Amino acid sequence: MSEPLIQVRDVEFRYPGHSPVLHGVDLTIDRGEFVALLGQNGAGKTTLAKHFNGLLTPTKGQVLVGGKPTSALSLTELARQVGYCYQNPDHQIFAPTVDKEVRFGPDNLGLPDAAELADRALALVGLTAQREANPFVLGRGQRQLLAVASIIAMDPPVLVVDEPTTGMDLAGAERIMRLLASWVADGRTIIVITHDMDVVAEFIPRSVVMAHGEVLADGPTEHVLRRSDLLPEARLLAPPAITVSDELSRFGVGRCGTIRDVADDLVHILGGRDAGRV
Amino acid sequence: MPVGYSVYRPTGSTIHTGIDPRVKMAWLGTMFTLALMFNGPAVLGALLVALLVTARAAKLTFGDLRPYLFLSLWLTTLSVAIWPTYVHGGHLLGHVGFVTVTSDGLLFGLAMGFRISIMIVSASLWMMITAPQLIAAGLLAMGLPHKAGVALASAIRFIPFMNAERTTIMEAQRARGADLGSGGPIRRVSNSVPALIPLFSRAFVTAQNLSIAMDARGLGASPHRTSALELRFGRRDRILVLAALAAVVIAVLCRIAGFGVLLGSYL
Image (tube, rainbow over all chains, first blue to last red; front, side):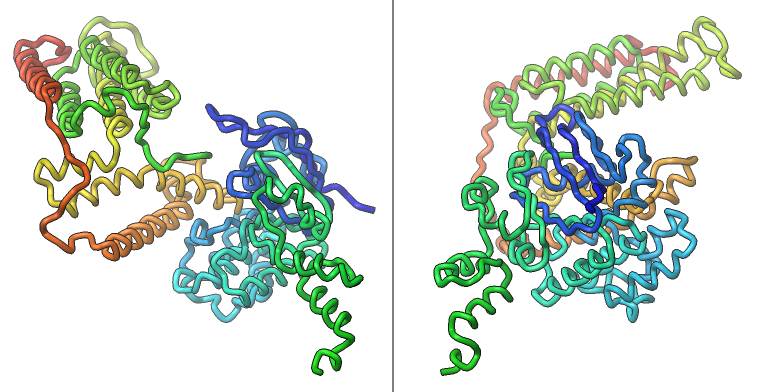
């Protein structure tokens, strides 16, 4: 049975002296879900996500984390529950070594097994060999992995990751998404803010589309990314895998949305690998 | 927090479009001089009101000025709280703890608060009514080397950007459980290291990238630089510069005569 972990109830938010950025947003995210927040710049994705860890509190409505309103919890208490990894790793890296950078969060939270958590997080992202290196000499992809590791080390049940694949090559993007998927498989909840529709189609089973501070669509990714009536309003384009998959449906094969699904469909249409070689 | 990428507020008022940037700069210098010439709260208060009237005439809103006014109010409050511990002339008003509060102490604190407020409001007003490219054009027309003009205009242009970066960095570190704001002054400085290092790093990287972009676009390639912006120094500008000069002369005479001066022994 699903267990609601984050509940957003009729939330409105406005910065002082500005128009509302969020209007009547309702959203529930269950424990163990892997969710994508999609939408154009200014749609309200990051503003909504900052409500999950208390960096922002609603002007109207309520956000509950683990059944408790965020307005009643301190930032430190919320940091234990919801880790937030920023888009640009250079907004948080400051320590002289990779190891110290990763330990910063667990030490702040007073976690007794901080060293062990940091070791585990570094191993998970493949940076154990660089633990004594200066973080500023790492490449962009490794700094992004370090930023993710520094949040994972805090061992939060929920992780919000803002644009994890920005500026990364394909191999790096796939690596980081596989890492996040493995963390979900471990029972964690992950919310990814992204514009990378290929990544969403390939890895993230649930998508929430936002536009103008409202939730336009919410559901299984393979359904949401086929909402040709809504995607243009959110200035989103369905990824090529979905488009090709839809075309293939005319041949009576399945309508899934990942590159692997499309490849399987093609093999099926062509009558198996041997037929394809002819 | 949404942060604009320029302090400039193009309202289209005559103050924005009808006055040469060199004149606006001259008036900025004049306001700083006037603020330093007087130390009586009445005159300094009147100057502050004049600045607010100018802002209104430039069609700026309270929202545009709010952060600077709040900063001014905070510093004025601090000044009123601190100066009575140093200035003890005038009438005895009472004792607060070990501090003897006198009328001169309070009024001088108020005047010093107004003085710093005039500087804050006039500098922010200057940036809000002068487009960054006109600031650079004005400086160039006054003989500043072109590269230095671009550097100064870029520095002004990047103030709000760096403020936005500061906000993001502080949020990122607070999300990691960092305590950036509590404790005494020494502890605060030590706690702010996780925010300061990324901020300085971002500033250096931004400056480096900007300089590369400028080089790539040929900045400084030719000593004879042309400009799409032509400044025209008209009749209105001449009158305003003369008025600024007159204001400075009158202020110096007032200082000598002791008008608008609460305590002659203080600046």
